[in-house]
Image: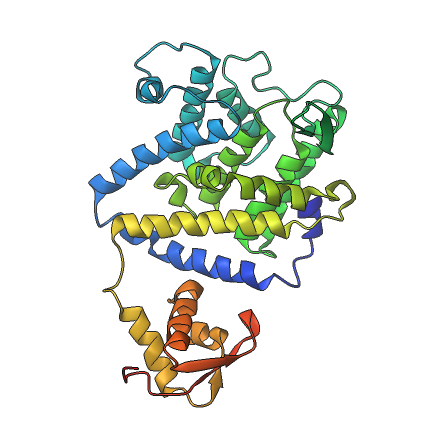
Amino acid sequence: MHTLKKYEKGISDIPAEIAWYIADVMEFRGKEDLYSSRSAQKLKMLRESSIIESSVSSTRIEGVSIDPARVEPVLRGNSPFRDRDEEEVKGYRDALDWIHSEGKNIPINTRTVLELHSFVRSGSSSSGKFKTKPGEGDIFEIFPDGRKKLRFATVPYKDVKRYMKEWEKRTSTLMESGKVHPLIVLCASSFDFLCIHPFGDGNGRVSRLLFLLHAYHIGIGVGRYVSLERIIEENKEEYYRNLAESSAGWHRGKHNEWHYIRYMIYILKSAYKELAEKMDYAEPRGVKTEMIEGWIQKKKGTFTLSEIQQAMPSVSHDMIRKVLKDLSRDKKIQSSGHGRSAVWKRISNIKEKS
């Protein structure tokens, strides 16, 4: 909640890269409702595939895995469990079913957190219970020779209930205030939960379920069709690196949360991009390229990427950057400066072949 506390008066400056990611996610979000009218059967297949991938990936990130041949019978409930790992994978699937079924009707509060933990730690004596021992849940780095080094001390067990109560209140207040973009609130709340680390085991899985649930609350439903957990697993090293970089100094409120926030918004952007590709919902190939090239052809003097974005808000930053790169390679335009501050100028007729 130290991140959420930072934002109680709003945010004066958002890193440019994160602002771009947010714009891209919201652009994709604007098309989400159109998908349902294209192919109900295809969406149904994507939903089932996403649930299976999420159940397997999220638990596997935490070291819980099952025989690939057992995945379908276990998740469909057609076979008795052979071990605890199978039971936990099925529990994650049950939690996903609950979230996808009820969506934003499920409140984001401590009671829901405990319920989600009951799902992912089904059958365990600690299921649905906060940690109860000193040092429980602390994060260590383990070296090849067996030595351990404390990487992050989580909130002590005696303070967990107080911290979770504040986390719940600050998340709700910031969501309702409208002072901070909902995507940033989503990621900040997720990050603070992970730093609190209220359970002895299962914190990562609960955090990903909470992220999915909170996304529903702000109208981001891509996790229903594309597994966010699978994309996180595919970028697992980056997940842990950004979490570690952001958590340094968290207890003193001297941390840099933007590493984690950027990473999680990138995950959402990647999921939406994948959904668009799977639904084949795209304009004819080359239409947006022609739009950008046409704008540059008519533009007199210098211009920036931001100017193109303002003129064509439906075109993503990634698409604009690609076209600029291609035109620069073909010696149609040239730039002074690099990266976000680059200023561009047309040096030849774009319509003419090089």
